[in-house]
Length: 112
Image 1 (tube, one colour):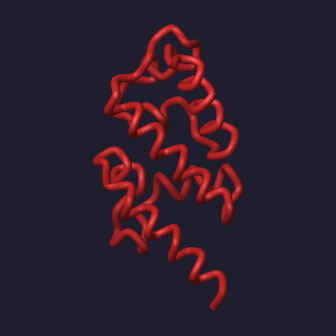
Image 2: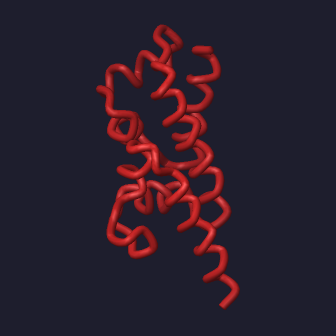
């Protein structure tokens, strides 16, 4: 499992432009914990694994529209498509469906 988690964090960094501190904030853990996950010496709790999985899926969807540095900004910024909320907060609170709906609307906006 730790290999999968390390790969997830690497993917978040590469595709989403996320730093360890970003992952820590979304997962509600310390940056040191994320470092241990990356090294494969520690595995996240099941709820946190779900958050990381959701985050990876969101980053994958956002990569269809944005470059990694733009994804990081999008996740951390208040967003009109999310009624002024931040995607990282919604993902942390297990409301990823709202974020995915907003990303779907991004796709709709590109065809206007």
